Image 1: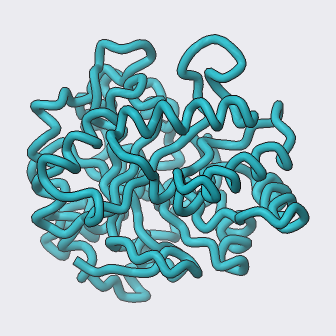
Image 2: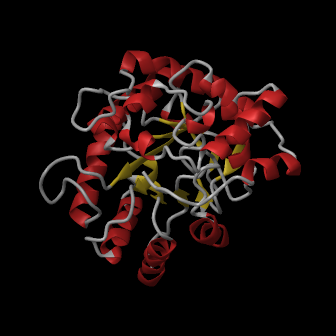
Amino acid sequence: MEYIRLGNTGLKVSRLALGCMSYGDPTTPNAHPWALTEDDARPFFQQAVELGVTFWDTANVYQHGTSEEIVGRAITRYSSREEIVLATKVRGKMHDGPGGEGLSRKAILEQVDASLMRLGTDYIDLYQIHRYDPDSPVEETMEALHDLIRAGKVRYIGASSMYAWQFAKLQHAADAGGWTRFVSMQNQYNLLRRHDEPELMAMCGDMGVGLVPYSPNGKGRLARPVGEQSDRSSSDRVVQAFDNPYDEPVINAVQTLAESRGLSMAQIALAWVLRNPLVTAPIVGATKPHHLPEAVDALHLQLTDEEVQALEAPYQQHGPSWY
């Protein structure tokens, strides 16, 4: 495993992050029906530790908090709190009422305590806002997040998919108020969705903000030939929303290169994301035994300029960029 500084911070993280959206109780409200229960998820945490993947990312809304609970217990079972860089998120709806969702001061202070309890820890390494909240003043949000750092509940703060102007507005509010800035951006980035390259990602590079992109395999569409389905893609409306004829030539290009080099499609797709110098640590979900080992092997995979050109040539910007 390789380790790298998160943006311009002194925090070192594993070059890959374990995404924990796939873990939790699938029977909870608004849960992903394909989520793995704790018993089924345990091997992946153990595998992550053995492979050196010590940057773990979850969110309060993943399976209504049960992902955080599973992650917290996995840290105790397979590692130690000091060894894991723990990330979670706030904004999505957890319950009715003013503190149940959003990025108001009330919601942030309530939800961080709830996450800490579920995670079984007294601090979060990276606390991320789960999208922009147009209903909360940016000054209120940034001051509340700063107060969490001052209180010792949070070490660093980050953001997730939004427009560049929204991220700039939040960072400017932090500067104007003398509050802590965001150090990371968790946006979707893969060969099928490159909307963020010219604005949001370029701005993050200029600001020294580390990118921890999710879905490097394009919701799994870049991991298998066109038309093949997984348990998730067969039932997940978000994945199905990405299906369109514009993506097929890109998927075919990935398949062609993977076959010519004797690699998996997922490795080719991940290697392309890792090639971007702005990317700190892509987030990789693991639901099959081969997922994490293949991802780690992709760290040492070098794509030639000609191969990259072949992968990028069919791309057309279209469709949803976030989810």
